Amino acid sequence: MKIKLNSKIYPLEVILNACHAFIDRAYIFLDSNGKAGNIIVSLKGKSRLSAGRLDCLHGDFMNELLNCALRYSVSKENKKIREYIILRALCASMPAQNPESNSEKLDYQQDPLGIAVPWEEKYGKKKKHAKVKV
Image 1 (tube, helix red, strand yellow):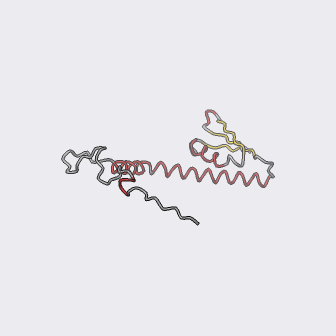
Image 2 (image 1 turned 45 degrees about the horizontal axis):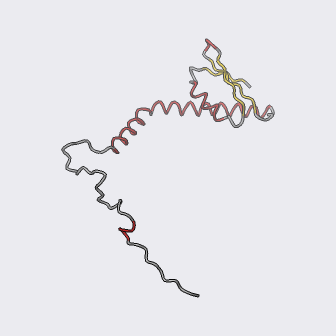
Image 3 (image 1 turned 90 degrees about the horizontal axis):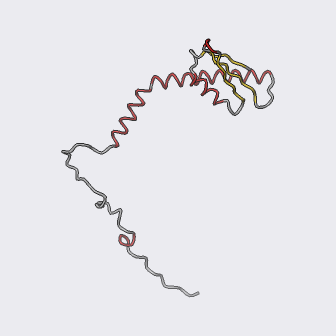
């Protein structure tokens, strides 16, 4: 089955995403129609398909194509807000760069939480238990 798609309506990224969803069900071949700007998608079932199953595969592919087109459109619309959220998250995780801040500068040798203290010093050595004869 061959499907001719207008690349002005469906960008290549959308077509590739839709094709990726069908890799498990069909062999997919892509071709270009040159100057017309069309992309030809050829679908061949991995197993023998009846005419009804082929129509079902065609319908499923077109639905997935619309789904991918919507995701692509929403992704483009929300790009700036996603970048802003990530930038805010990264900036919030950075230490303060204010030289007038009252916080003490700690170096690697200071250990205010006692994390670097060895287990034996912190909790004592294990006590030896007397052996019991049975």
